[in-house]
Image 1 (cartoon, one colour):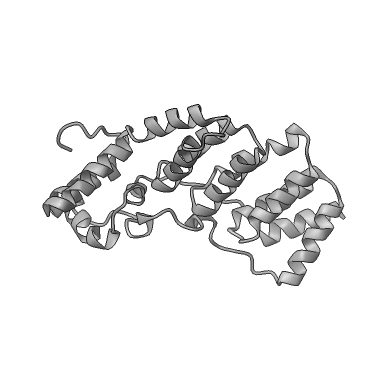
Image 2: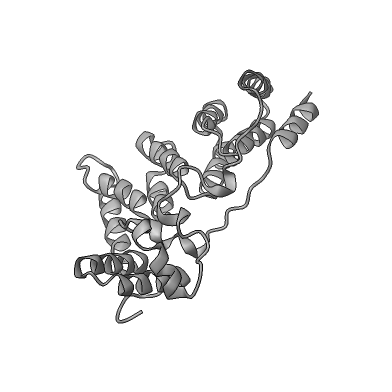
Length: 237
């Protein structure tokens, strides 16, 4: 039975690699990408891969947006059969498939896995899975973990800060502004660090050019950051 289930999982799903490309800088700024795409192309001498798509954190990362083509009733049957085995490896394989395929049911399945398998060695498989991808769904999952204390809140704050975008910044700030939070001080420190990092200060500087009407300079700054997101924004780019 287990071999049949695993075969179903392999046929129905797959494994996706996360490619954290440099073209995601635009999504980290509060900028309308439509105003800048053409200027960025000019500044870089051509098309920058994924500029228009990278303007905001996607709901589901392109690498995992294939979805599952199986009938919903059949999926429920497979899920019930899988979890009725109480085999951690089989259940994790199913959870990994559902998450990696970009299914809307991924948060529910992940929580079902965590409720079924509570040993540390089983639970600890989930964070590396979720943090492979940078999208709104994965960030929401981490935020839910943070709110419920599913994993160490200190560790979750660090994982969320690695998203390096305004959505993650908002989550950190929310914790930093909560007087009753047990990790308030840590969140405040992480928030302070995030807003001084080059990706944030560089893009904020580029955004400030909107007020001066110097879109070309803004585009050059953004293009430079896209080519080197770790570049400091001190001085000209």
